Image 1 (cartoon, rainbow, N blue to C red):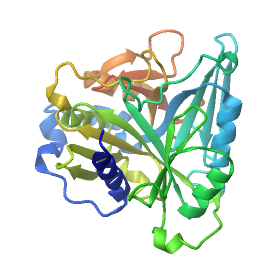
Image 2: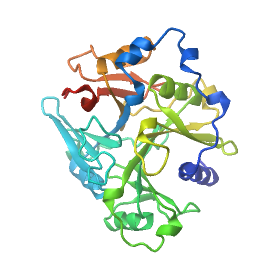
Image 3: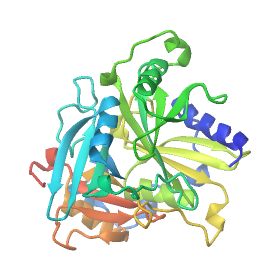
Image 4: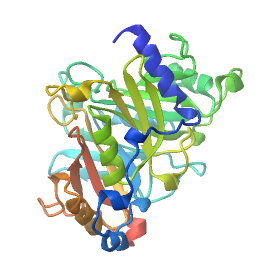
Length: 357
């Protein structure tokens, strides 16, 4: 990718904080009655997509001690840990949990903006083990996670002073209001400001309790198919579209409306990056992170009623990776999006009133 295109892409990623233009009719979803002639009243009575949350994004890590240390530096905490010694892996769920956080103190299923770290035992001692960060050819797919911060200059200086490397510093190139830091496994973490860079230029302090896990980015082959899936099947709304026809790509930001408008202060956004023309190439595909070489694992949606939600998905004829009835784990399901990214479905324990884990 040439430098001009990189600059344009970064400019559009940053501009998603600005008011959105009207979404073109070609990509606007049809009404529910147009999509599904039969009544959805029964399903709506048992599961309501308006109550869904974009709960977490999972990445595999080599050394959990180093990864937890990094994300703790960014202000996150381990809010839930599951250990599976018999299967030789552990899961760490990291999120913002201070009194200033969006969902501080909530059950881990009743949140947005979680990063799940998956550690397979022994990788930390294997000098040859590395993860696929999703940004290197020929295995591109997952792009990055993104945190928003109060004072971006001070926040980036604090991260750099702690010894972490940057893919792009604030001072690199012409885009001086976003940065990309590398976590211990080389995953990209975008850093954006909740205020203008002019407003925070001379501020030397930063409060990690105000940070947000703003969005997760994945690349998609066919924008229309992906938008249809995430809106009509998973119930998200298209909150922002940034088109750059001159450089051949468009960015789409989706999320659940009940979590608030598109802004740097919210969590639970999904960014879809579409490079124009990929949809016309029959041989083109993105790497889903679960085929070798592995890295990114999945995103996860928490729902109000797991059985009803999965029945709704069944009725909508989704492609399943794992149904609720498959295997021994009856409390999670996985569907495949149009690019074969995995989407986990779990139950929001606050809404269901029962423990599911």
